[in-house]
Image 1 (cartoon, rainbow, N blue to C red):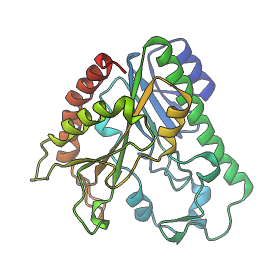
Image 2 (spheres, rainbow, N blue to C red; image 1 turned 135 degrees about the vertical axis):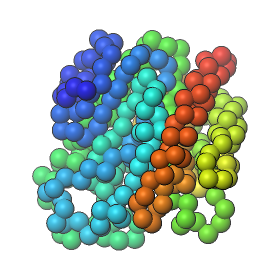
Image 3 (cartoon, rainbow, N blue to C red; image 1 turned 180 degrees about the vertical axis):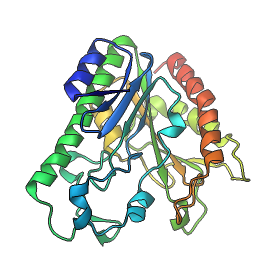
Length: 275
């Protein structure tokens, strides 16, 4: 893996180089093994939280981890193009626009003991800005090479906080063109609903059940690129114990292995669909 500036990463994309790099501030990473018409993204995978914020933060490390999306990059790491955040959403949230990416409070609790200094806020905003510079360059390059592109926007959510049965998989579609892509969404939901996981985990896949797909990553790409479909795809945290932080690697690996098959099938369906 290389360590590259954002300008260098963008130049490598424009030159259609194959590479794996972490940004020089270690805020995100990008792997391109081949230029293909699909991307896997895991914007909430990161857990890093810079030291200058530690003493001012009211949330414990576990409280931050609880709201992050651990292992979402791991679930798609075998695919040719993967982009993922390295920093915690508590530092800045890549799935929110820049003006609201830095939390004042998080899940009913004030985040900072004292208001953040301007220099800390600007550092976080710059990281957010740099990530989206690379996203824009990547999608622009792929749309120049392919008639259409699909982005798998991977997330997870805490199922134990719900007081009703919730699905293993939730697809958020309120901000995509459902008249154009509705049949493809249903095909993706059908495949995910047929996933078989260890430990007797019940497999259900619903659309707009727990979340509706209102994230900035999806909106940014959808609003700026006409021929790219973003599928906000959330898995409930059946692959870990939400309350202790223990990861169940057999479940994570099973998801990864099945997505190795399902994602390429979805891409092929997307390529032949007349949309």
